[in-house]
Every structure is written in structure tokens, then in C-alpha cells.
Amino acid sequence: MSEPKAVIITDYLTKTYGDVPAVEAVSMTVMEGEIVGLIGPNGAGKSTLIKMLTTLLPPSSGDALIAGYSILTAPAKVRAHIGYVPQLLSSDGNLTGYENLLMSARLYLVPHHEREERIRSALALMELADAGDRLVQHYSGGMIRRLEIAQAMLHEPAILFLDEPTVGLDPVARHGIWKHMRELRDRVGMTMLMATHQMDEAEALCDRIAILHDGRLQAIGTPGALKADVSPDATLDDVFAAITGSEIAKEGSLRLIQQGRSSAHAHS
Amino acid sequence: MPIPEPKPARAVLSYLTQIQAVADTEIRKLRRDPSELLTRAFQPVVWLLLFGEVMANVRGLNTTGQSYLDFLAPGILAQSVLFSAIFYGISVIWERDLGVLHRQLVSPAPRSALVLGKAVSAGARGVAQAVIVYALALMLGIGLSFRPFDILGVIALIWLGSALFSTFSLMIACLVKTRERFMGIGQVLTMPIFFASNAIYPIELMPHWLQSVSLSNPLTYEVDGIRTLMLQNGLSRYGLPIDFAVLLVLTGLCVAIAAHLYPRLAE
Image (cartoon, rainbow over all chains, first blue to last red; front, side):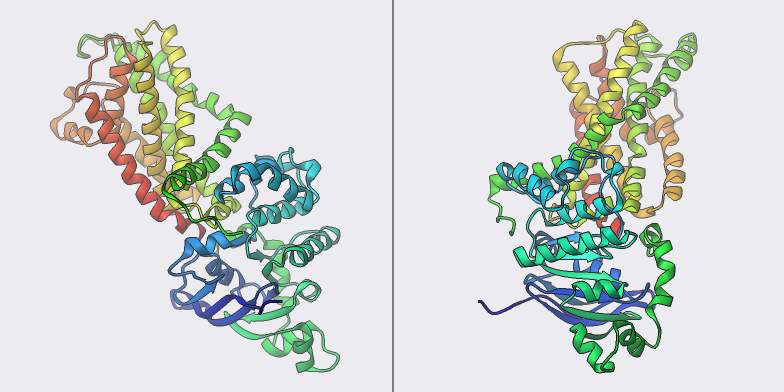
């Protein structure tokens, strides 16, 4: 076993819109092979943080090293080493699953002779082998999510960023996504940073949890340690309430309905 | 697996592959649903059949030895290229709202490759439009040139014009970011670009100030080039090298600016 190494290091990462801080001086570290959950209600800054780490959004100040590359000075290198499953359903409905993956394979320069094989095995891994030649607009929500994970891992990235990977899915589909995420971690040791506002999801998947509130990192630790700090029989909801003084369920519920389009326009 | 460090020859090939990634998906979608091409074909039909036939009876139009319909057909072809390309930005705003664009922007592909991919697919649309205008022109008895060099030249000009106006459109889309604002600006732009050009009348008919506007309008050079190569008795006013050079330089400029602005769409 080699020394575990840090693959995400953020250093006082900050994003402000006008005077309003969306993310404020977030410093945290994610080790190779970890699944880390970013927890917080709507507006806590989870998506903004992930957009900065995936180089979609330039930070106002601070920096981050992703797989050893700075998001400020080497964004193209960062992009080559990461996969991203955005909050919006980003597959193109007018293309087949195969065609969506073909576009990714070309954008990420998967060698020509490996393309077919990689696309087929990614489809198989996500249990989409039979659906590959169907238009994505006929897929179910769970299938689209699985396709997007397939797209994001096609180039075998070191780190996968997922923004609310199971929002809007039914329980069966959610558990399916969880299973696939665990498999990815166990099989290829992929590091994952996942934003979620669902406590059960964080508890089921994450090695460590980072609690974000009002743009600030309030706490980070294993679910067990976070709970033990509050009380012996605390739940993650209790932890969240103790740290932020509010309940995530109340703040988060409206978002389930508004999820999707609204966030696309949030900062336009 | 990290992306291999590019060697020069390989770097070019990689860049082309990334352009193809975007262009190919656009062309696949167009082939799957060509209805847009057919509805867009309606406008040139109206211009040539209604406007053209009437204006052909106006004696005062000096179209340098060509019949008015001959003069008009290349202008209408250039117009259809302009109109389909100038609203290209709307599809990118749509992709931004869906999140499709974010996927392209988190890939290591250079932004200019993503923009060029769009430009190439706009060119494919333009060429499809041209086939329809040629068929129509043939039915109207317009003296078309079918020399291979001329045809290739027209295709090249259509591709360039589509690339120019579509990337110009992308630039605007990156700045305004919403469909409503974009539609407004698109409407405001198209008519002046069209009328302040040599598309439907010789610029000698214009007052002097408008002539200078026309001479700085890229559509004028697009029309001039197409008029030269599309017709049997085509004559270039400015010279084909000038026509091509103007379009090439401006396309390069628009690609560079659009590539610079493109990441704004994901913010």
C-alpha cells in the first residue's frame, strides 16, 4: 500500500456575487479513494463550490489543487483528470446513449481503437447495454443519471464530482445509483466529491461529510465522529441542526420541487 | 487515465477530433429531424418567386448585364445562410439551460474546438439550404454554373459565411445568456445586415453613407463571392481573393472572441 495522497486541496476558496458571498474561505482536503459528501440546504454554496472545483466558475479568491493541478493556472489539466455529473440532466435527449458517450469519448480523446470497447463496457457497467441505441429522451430519470455517470467515467478520471446525483429519482433508482457509485470506488478506487442535501444519502455513501452553511465550511468528519460530537445517539439531522441552528428538511424541501431549471438561472 | 501529452502532429489530430465531437452530434440531430431545414426553405421560395418575379419588371435596376433573377438568386442563397446562422446562438442558450453545455465545458477540449464544432455544423446546415436554393433556381431557369471548381467554391463560401455568422451569434449568446434577450437582438441585427448589403440590389443604388456601410458588411463579400461562382456569367466586383480573405479574417476573429466568452455560459 502506498501512502494515501490528497487529490483535492482547497485553500481559502471564495466566490462572491457583488457583496454576497456564495462560498467563503473554504479550506478542505480529500484523500484518494474517498467519497466525501458536501451537505447543506439550498443556497449553502454546494453547487458553487463544485463549479469552482470543476473549473466552470472562476473563484473570487483562493485556489484549489485537483490531482495536483491548480484550478487557476492549469484548468485544462484539471479538466483532463476529473469527471463531472452536473445537477441538471445534461445528456442530450435527441441523441442515443451510445452517441452521447461517443461525444464524450472524442472530447476526452479516448484512443480511437479503444473507443468502442470502452463505450460498450461503460454501458454494461451502468446496466444500459440494451438501451445504448435508444434515444435518451425515452430513458427514465434513473437511466439518464446512470448514463451521465458512464459519460463522466469514460476517460477513467481520478476524481468524480457529482452534484445531487439522485435528486428527483424514485427509491429504487436511488439505490441503483448508490450501488454503482460504491462499485466505482471499490473497483477502480475513484475519488468522489458529492453534493447532496439528503442525509440518508450522505450516511449511506460517504466516508466523510463536510457541512456547508451560508457558504462556510462548518464541520468535516466521518459520520460517526460528527454524530458522537453531538450526543451518543444523535442522527445526522441532529448534527446539522446543532451546527447550523436549523433543520435541513425544512430548508431543503422546496428545492425538490424547484430542482432543475431554477438553479440553471440562479446566477445568470 | 490522464490524457497523453500531445506531440505536434498528434495535437492537430486531437484538436480535429474534438471539433468533430461537437459537429458530429449536431449533424446527427439534424439528420434525425430535418424538419427545420424544410421550414427554413420556405423563405427563399417566397423571395425568389414573389419578390424576384415582381422586381424583375423594374427597369431602373442596373444589374450589370444579368437578369434580375440571376442577380437575386445568389443574394437569396446568402440570405438563407445568414438567417439560419444568426439564430444559432439560441440553440447554445438552450443547451446551457439543459446542462448539455456544461458537459462540454468540463472536458479538456479547448474552447475554440467547441466553438469551431458548432461553426462546422452550421456550415452543414448552410450547404443543405444551398441545395434547396439551387433546385429552385434551376426551376426558374437561372443560368447556374455547374463547373466543379465553382461548386466547390460556393460550398466553401457557404461554409465560411455560416461559420462567421454562427460564431458571431454565439458571441451574442454568451453575452446575453437568455433566449428572450437573444431573440430581440437577433431580430434587430438581421434586417440591417441584409438590407445594407448587395444581396437584393446593387450598392450603386444606395446613398453614399449606406454604400460605405455595405462595404464594411461581411454579407456583401459573401454575396459577391457566391454571385461570382454560382452563375455562368458571374462577375466579381471586389475579386474572389478579397471576398475569401474578408470572410476568413472575420471568422477567425469571431471564433477567437466566442471561444474566450464561451465559459461564461456555464457560470
